[in-house]
Image 1 (tube, rainbow, N blue to C red):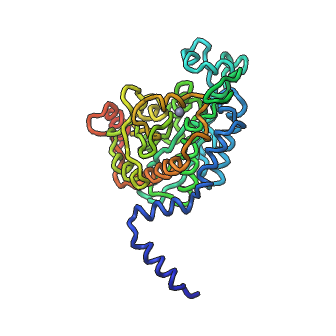
Image 2: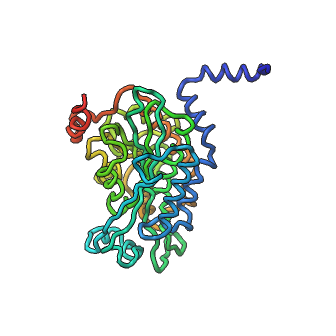
Length: 363
Ligand SMILES: [Zn+2]
């Protein structure tokens, strides 16, 4: 069949584009705006009632994520229970987390504090293409749980509400991981990619801590973790990296963000956000692991008006920004998964010693 002249022109034009533009147009082609936002809209809908541990809707969320992984063509691990890592956790009624998370006591079924709750991380992977790098995995992670429901309903932001939808925190991050699985299943990078949606982050990183203690891929084959989690945002011109200047991959993350018009900011001062999300669980074991997050220029009222509030909803988010945020996250992951050099901590980082114990004993 003859190739029309217009198509030849388009193809030659395409071939001369810089690599960055080829990547952004491929991401746009594989993930349309509607497809990309669908997991966020569903997970943050009232139907899922705030995805709180102890409520049946968190299992609905887990099943949805597993189905999305499967439909994308991401595989389940032989070491997992299908797409799940299932475990029991006992949450003591004496635990201080009840102070930070007052809904918890109300949302937990009777007896669960003593008998334990069944919790699920959702896990899938895509095999890398490079025979010399595919035994190294990068982890793309988010937590899919949130704060559930409160009773009675309260007035917030001009309406009566009882559901903590957690659209930013962290339906957005979970959508980013699902979208990354869809993209990398179609366009696998050199390294293998492990996708983990953690449970029970809001109760103190329970899901990621369990995973770090019971890894499904050996930790010395887990070379990097780009976690994604959000409080809120007060700029649409930037993203944050909790752990900026701490690993060797910042320039790649910056390049990916800039491709979408997003500057890369450090976390706001005095909030210890690096240690307050799931990245901390693998970071403590020596694995370079920052958290990618929507832009926070300062921890001000714009953030606290949404962070862990009933009004953290899709309706008051800038969806054009969310699309760029998710696409930039995927592009950053692709750059890191294709980086010929194994990611490391910056020289002198507090976690560098653990990295050396984990990786250099095998050399
Ligand atoms: Zn979160």
